Image (cartoon, rainbow, N blue to C red):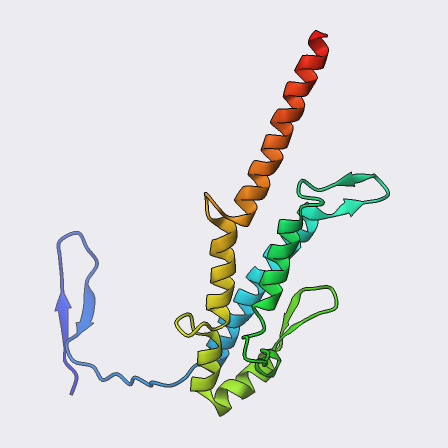
Length: 178
C-alpha cells in the first residue's frame, strides 16, 4: 500500500512525497560498461603513444624535429608502454581484445573482450587488475616511472635538454665577448 503526504511550505510549490515505495535492485556483471572503461583506458594509452610520436618525430621535408627527437629514453618509454600488453607469462591480451597494430598503437575489440569476460569474469579481471600486476598496474608502473618529478624518464630527458641549452647559451655568450 502506498501513502502520499503533501508538504506545503509558504512560498514553495507543493510537492507530493511518497512515504513507502517498492524498488527493484538488480545486481549483475556489466560487461558492456567494463568494455567501455577498457576502451577508454586503451584510448588514453594511445594518446600518450601519439604524443611521444609527435614530440620525437623528425620531418625530413622541413628538416625539423620535435622537442624530444633523438631522445632514446623516450623511445624506451614508448616500448615499455607497448610491452605492458604482454603480462610476462608468455601470453598477451589479444584473447581479451587488446592488440598492438603495425603503427605501434593499441586496438581494442569490444566483442572479443565481452565474450572473454562473459566466459571467465574472474580470469579477465585478474589480467587487468591493479593489485595482481595486471595490464592497468603495468601501465601505471611505466607511467609513474616516466613522470616521477625527480628520476622519471621524461623529467630526465627535459632536464638533459635544458642543461644542453644552458651550456650552448653560455658558449654563445663567451664567443660573443671574444
